[in-house]
Picture (spheres, helix red, strand yellow):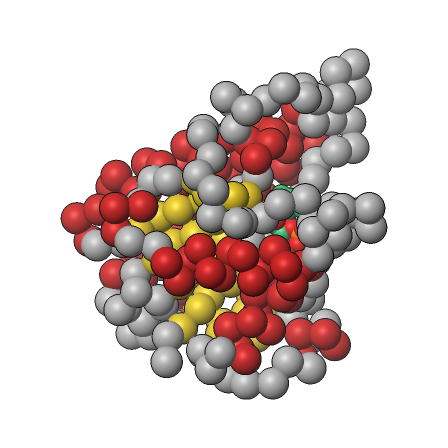
Length: 226
Ligand SMILES: NC(=O)c1ccc[n+]([C@@H]2O[C@H](COP(=O)([O-])OP(=O)(O)OC[C@H]3O[C@@H](n4cnc5c(N)ncnc54)[C@H](OP(=O)(O)O)[C@@H]3O)[C@@H](O)[C@H]2O)c1
């Protein structure tokens, strides 16, 4: 069966992805700052947990080294923060921007960089980043959320460059918008539940072709513009 490596696996969409792929029989390398979270520990199947802060560059390198020789079919950069504190015009706080960019834009690219060989040695060769429609420059009609939106735009650009640079190694790199989802980040009023979002995204992932590399999709499969 294929193998998944995912960040931010202890709650929200990350936890739901682990449930989905573990139930499908995949081996799951579930990375989280809190790998002993009861909800994660309770998931049955071949789930291996690792303590990893997504912005711990040395920790990423150490994990990649520990897993050398292990093919990773699907690398899923999921961990993210909203950066909404001091995110609006008039309240912009450089330290919030820094942490939001480190987590949402740089960490996924560092993860991809560390695991290129593992993914290249797999059968499916997929790298997916959970971005946001809010990172689309062309679709921005709402303004605000400066740090978050800009960090996701930067993520999109990083992933697009990966799609170009890794084409020769047969790796498909795609960014996904999960919808507005009722996680801690999305809030209880969000119209899409985590199971609905993950059902959609995993369907999109299962249908991807190499020619999709570099693209941006909604969780229902609709293409999005950058
Ligand atoms: N929910 C939405 O409506 C929505 C919409 C668009 C995009 N997204 C994106 O979807 C992804 C998942 O979000 P979510 O809704 O599931 O949010 P969430 O419920 O707030 O969960 C965020 C996850 O990211 C982890 N995380 C944050 N910073 C981390 C770090 N430095 N190292 C390791 N893990 C870290 C959290 O771990 P801790 O428990 O340790 O904090 C948690 O597991 C994010 O990239 C988010 O931007 C969500």
